Each structure stands twice: as structure tokens, then as C-alpha cells.
Image (cartoon, rainbow, N blue to C red; front, side, top):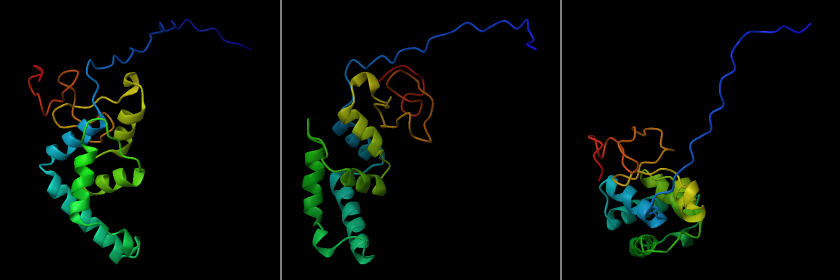
Length: 153
């Protein structure tokens, strides 16, 4: 036996479409934002990557012939922050994520996806909607940490 209820059906609302930014954030811009947000210059980040590599070789997780010099990391990082250059290997992005707050998935999405599918990223600090400590948004392109008054950058 079916019961009829007098509940009103909720009106169907459509999701708001994601409006792409007028100037989409690039992967190299995201890497630069995250690096600067934690106060690192390229040489500092290269030193952290060198230490990580040394630790992995010491633990037997990386062969000794894969150990790169700090200068090699400096040149790789300079290249990764150059306009139009993309990391070819996911391992490179994961190594960067191991030594500083950086989301390899956000980088990949910025590199590969249509700008309408880009994650929302703060232009002040590089925090994205995928970060677990994401503050609320002050404007369409900045979080409340970078623009507490919500007045734009």
C-alpha cells in the first residue's frame, strides 16, 4: 500500500557554473606562490630537495646514482618556474610536496585541465580549495589571510 504525503517538493536549483578567471593561474605561478608563501627562495628549496634525496639514498629507497647536486635542483626549479614549462615527472612534484606545502594535484590540474576546471587558488599565498586548512574567500582570487578586508588585491 502506498502512502501519499503532503510534503512540498523542494524546487530544483542548478549549481552555479564555475566562472574561469580572466587571467588563469599557471602551474609555474602556483609553484612560485607556494614557495614564497613559506618564505623559501629557490636555493632554500633546492637545499631541502638535496637533503631529501640524501635521506632517501641513506634509507636505500633511492639508488646512489640518482643523487643530484644542489646546483642541479636549483636549475630544475628555475626551469619549473619559467613561463610555459611543465614538470614531466610526477615524482618531481611529489618531491617538492614532501619538503614544502605544495599540492601536486593542483599543479597537474592547472597544467592539464581547461581553465573552467581549475581549482580556486588564492593569488596571495597559493592556498587552494583542496587544502585542509583553507580559510574562507575574501574575493574571487584571494583568501581571508591575504585580504582580510575583502577589498581585492
